[in-house]
Image 1 (tube, rainbow, N blue to C red):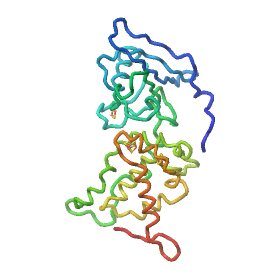
Image 2: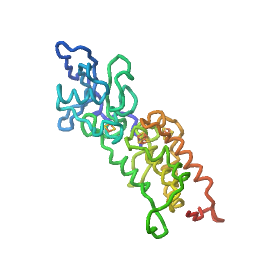
Image 3: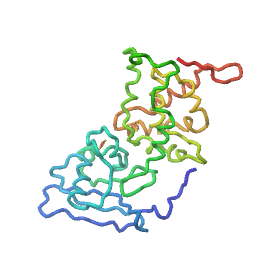
Image 4: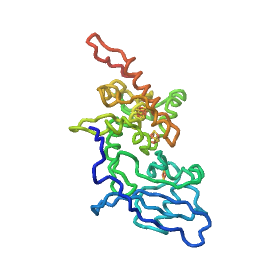
Length: 277
Ligand code: SF4
Ligand code: SF4
Ligand code: FES
């Protein structure tokens, strides 16, 4: 359950290192970057890097420049550099987003702070442990499940039904939404092996499969969300939708799942009827 005070070893100490801009730098911006090294007993610190940004347009480019030219010990994840892989998500100037699609110009002219995604265990510097996040994604069974035998060719879908997946399938699992959700901070961790609140990313994906005309496990999927925590800990705070770098709307998807839950037929005992498509 929620821990309202920071553990002693996670408090940021004041004496971060300062790396001055190289002589003759044409245009500098200061990157204030969270540093934590699990191989020492030291608390985290924030290092200040004055970076020549004459040829830097995105925050990720700045971090790569720091790693390549100033401090190779800085750790962070990145891969595609195109907003597709979802691995460079950090908390930048107080908001979760992708470093590769966030331009320095978007951040005004002041310093740039880069912290790990909030409320996740930090492995090193900006690298967080997303095991629980991925387990929650696995929990919703993100794949087509059918009761009929496989067709000889492909599962057919009309253009109208395919269009229902727009705004859902584009999720890149960057975790910006879930780790910005206060309810996820407080209720997102498993207790005694039981899933708690699944969070907006997993629930958006759950709705993606609930909306798929080819999937035949709608009722079972809803059954698997039916308790006090997995779905109903969303309180429509909307942080998730505000931060999603792919402009998706997890809060709306969650509301749609709640509607499906309320509208599904029940038998005389109050149990949900099997409404397999
Ligand atoms: S709308 Fe729901 S999922 Fe989104 S931030 Fe709020 S509580 Fe979290
Ligand atoms: S819904 Fe948006 S913010 Fe959330 S994991 Fe998917 S792409 Fe990232
Ligand atoms: S590096 Fe892939 S999304 Fe940023």
